[in-house]
Image (cartoon, rainbow, N blue to C red; front, side, top):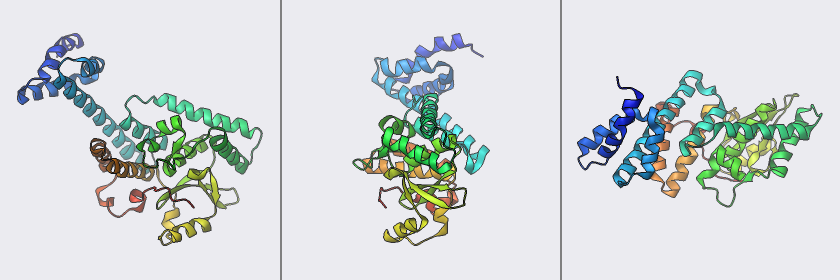
Length: 304
């Protein structure tokens, strides 16, 4: 078995063979480089952007993308099939960001969420009432940090990712709601996602048992269940109790993927569309493709 040093010596020759006009030769080189990629990624990345041969650059970038997506697919499968529908939502949205942007600093994202939660704690001071802490959360996110719904460019795909949401402070209902839930979890607040058709909300259950709904897209506006039902009826939906069930992490991630598929179709980003379809097919059981509102309801920004 060749050592790392011996493999490294093979790489320049294999990289040049990758640009060969004979598809049989380039395919053999491609497959061999795939085997070596994990131990020599840095060298391959350098060649992917610096080699003189454009065929080498193109094929190396495809190779690096393919191996990255394969690893992410395996990671998604572990999340879904080892932990079931109720895996760690934070890890799920981080994985979605890494599909879009391979250089995302996950530790940095965790730190930003921790800092936002710490700001809420400081703002709430000595308050112990859950309602008061929720008010502090709204104040920090929407007044101090200026998070908001992107009403000007709703179909920008960057609205859907947690890393770009934290950077730009604008998102769509589901991404803003996920942010809200991740911070609420750090504060031990009972806040959950509710997958209404066309508009994702959060639900907060008070100690009294009373439920209120939070429209995070509209700066944390508080809604009653009656107002939510009125919204459904006004927009052509009938009332169905299942609309008000707590959404599972799987359901949330699948809805985020579904939104992105619609957005990439809208923008004709076919390469990204194909990639999302790969991950969507892992996340959604085949028998659920056409009959689950949680999976197929799209956020479209309709306001209450």
